[in-house]
Amino acid sequence: MKVAVIGGGSTYTPELVGGLARERERLPVRELVLQDIDAERREVVGGLAGRMLERSGFDGDLVVTDDLDRALDGADFILVQIRVGGQSARLSDETVPLACGCIGQETTGAGGFAKAMRTVPVVLEIADRARELAADGAWIIDFTNPVGIVTRALLDAGHRAVGLCNVAIGFQRRFAGLLGVEPESVLVDQVGLNHLTWVRAVRVDGDDVLPELLAEHGEALAAENELSPDLVAVLGVLPSYYLHYFYEHDAVLAEQLEGTPRAQTVIEIERGLLELYRDPALNEKPALLEQRGGAYYSEAATGLAASLAAGSGETHVVDLRNGGTLAGLADDDAVEVPARVERGGPIPLNQAPLAPELLGLAQHVASYERLTAEAAVTRDLETARKALLAHPLIGQWSLAADLLERLIEAGHLPTLAPEAAA
Image (cartoon, rainbow, N blue to C red; front, top):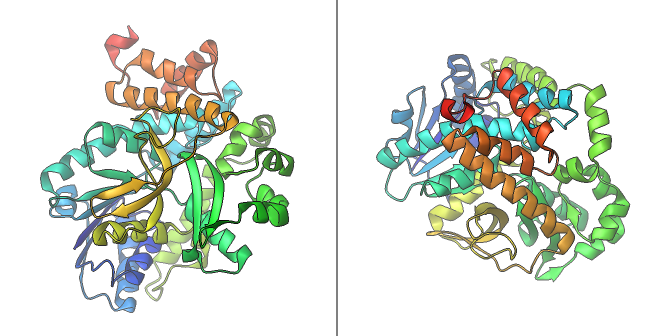
């Protein structure tokens, strides 16, 4: 089996390498290719990956390259974890919206829009090349944000793809710790859109223990997700961290206007990580990597790949076509729900309708995602404006126009179609 990691120079890659080593029995990788266009990252991260694999007893081949075709040729799994524009573009995404009085976040709102506009065309180019070169039946697993929009674009283009986020597995591990059970025994019924999900049930041996968790640990769980305990109590579900941008909008904006952008912090963390990775004696992921974010990324990614390879029927929370799973959303929307993973792909578990207070927000953001995926492909200026107008964190015509102009001026938004701008 061949696994290609596009964006293999990411500081996340040691997490992934560790996961592949742990899953070697279920996912017998004979060739691992780390592809990246950044020569320094390629060398540094690839060096650590090699030492980690050697320590784990990996007897396959590790290839570190900038050649996309070499990476994709014959690949059974293509894991996409790229950041178009690097951390400087992320910094722009997080700061430009603030000048308009809007929240700056790399996957939500105007910042997420800019990232999608940069990222979707690049991922589609990679996928088109994979269609020509990869093994028959190859899977694209997208971990590149904004996952929901990128996955939708891949599916719209007819690719065999599934999106993946680490929020659900993070919840699973947290709940398991609180309950004193093994993570594998916990099924998190997390539903919605990527980075717009709610945990509606937590099942252990078929029994829903979410009411018990909220009764005993509701305040702590709410605080961890930067939400009001009263909000969680009223909703009766546990929103993901990303919902605090909506439910606590004014407080978040005030904090961002006064604070240091997350991108700036990540830049410093990555600088420290790469310095650690250069140490020829280092052959395991350093503790500093935990501060980078993306907890349990390796377990989520390698676990999903192993389930797809074996067709084992395990349940994973993934991003895929709605297909009637969540009533009130279009069949072709990309939703994030638990799915039984068979060899032919993930099959979403049946879901009760979303409560009105959840569905309304999901519909709003789904409309934005539809328009953004279209704008990213067509490069149409008017569609881009409509996308920003549709987002509940923006929603005003003059604000949408101002944001679009500022994002273009910042230099991290690819040129829109000249005929549309005329």
